[in-house]
Image (cartoon, rainbow, N blue to C red; front, top):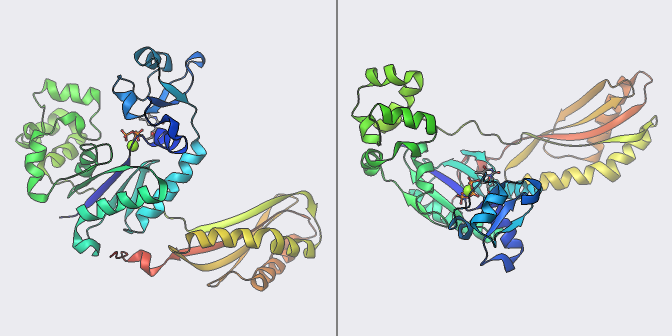
Length: 351
Ligand code: TTP
Ligand code: MG
């Protein structure tokens, strides 16, 4: 049996806006477009949800349901930045993290020894850590199957968590309304109902042959889920494997020393800051220089190393420079390749 935690931020975009403007705290608030511009609601807080307001609803309909609804324009860049911050927190708990959307992630914590192997305690700790570092609340689901962890994270929303223990998997599935299973949309749900399937038990007790006759290949995976034998794992880690910084010149450069000075004054520090930010997770294993010439051809020169130093970058620059064939340089960049640190390959332990 594996152990999965699904983390989902509560009313994510709108919680960020309320965090940054606490006068909104007791009010119904939504992030979205204004009604006079045919806007729609992107998301809303739980106070607004009590009036029936929800995502994707036209703002003028939402205003009819809730006259005092405060509408705030979205700040995607900020939400993305916070999402990255949350991802970093999650990656400090397990090396198997899959961000599935801007505010949602799965962790496989089967092999994590921290919290005496208790995924429940770990989920609690993750939520505390997210709150401490971002001022935002998250909910969690904990289960031996990935899709059940996702369903469970909705059970005690907002700011709560729900655990499905291994011996509770079958009873949980048996009473589960099929529309809650990820992938079962309104059309499939209606078809399932037509054939007499309403809750997990109806599929679990059906025979696979009949079920796949009715629902085709998709039926196999749904049938397996309802047997409690879904083998979904965390998707390939999408960790950053390199960092780069580059600039296009307003006037092409024909002097090697100008490029050297540019690396020293403009690029080197900038890249170091970005490396420092990801250092707890990664080690440098190579560095390189990229040049793009006036005819738009480009070349890179790289070398194995464990840190970026100016002498190495100058050396690589000189080698790349030799390939210019008399052309001027329109773009200069430097980059590093990164590999996972050992602590990131194992699981960090917490007190
Ligand atoms: P959700 O996790 O679906 O919603 P939520 O975080 O706002 O609320 P909940 O407490 O129920 O989890 O989506 C995360 C963010 O994605 C949400 O804050 C806004 C954005 N989003 C859209 O842009 N369009 C949509 O249709 C939905 C549902 C969400
Ligand atoms: Mg959410």
